[in-house]
Image (cartoon, rainbow over all chains, first blue to last red; front, side, top):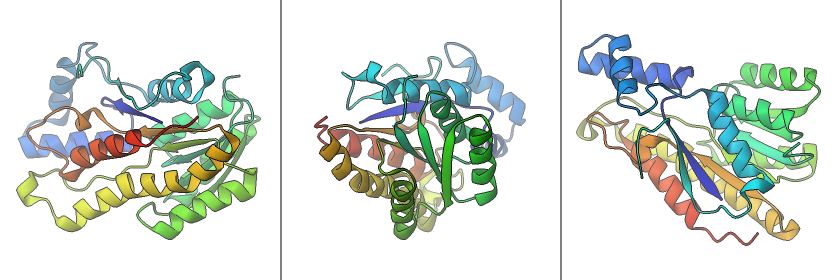
Length: 81
Length: 174
């Protein structure tokens, strides 16, 4: 049993809605809000749904047989703990 | 193939991350059972998987509803015999407002979808996993469970964290 903590998966509707809502609250343009957030990430970009799926595939396969109880960040270097 | 003939129940799988997981798992040989609220998206995802040579079935339901969680599990078992992999991916977040403005009804719904549904489904799949001495549960959370942001998705960050913590504490016997 494990967990994945994705960063901003910018292609999903949930992520787009959240970004737009945050931009409204902060009274800035949504592209500007997104650019600011992505800049704070080590890789400087969001993740794709496929990249999150690849991590899930690994965790569900025999290759992850010794991994349990972990919350793994798949976030391009957004947080480091 | 990394998941040959494994049966995977994936929540929130009509679009976004859940859909990508379902598609990828199917290409790796898994048999996938999909559930989400929007039947049209489930049907499109299942059809795409089937056309690609994979095996998929689905049921529409609301994870905030205990009966729908049970129905998803039971239909997955009825369709494919068991559940080897549970991916608790379905999510809901309410308004983006500071904690003091967050409506308690929305907070309850976020908890119901992220935490309670993940717990219920885990409770349903675990006996079979223990019996077969095989099984995996993966919860899709968020870095918002770990980071601190000025305007939070109210309960979302905190509850997703709770989802990780509570479930990852469960004993893994396999």
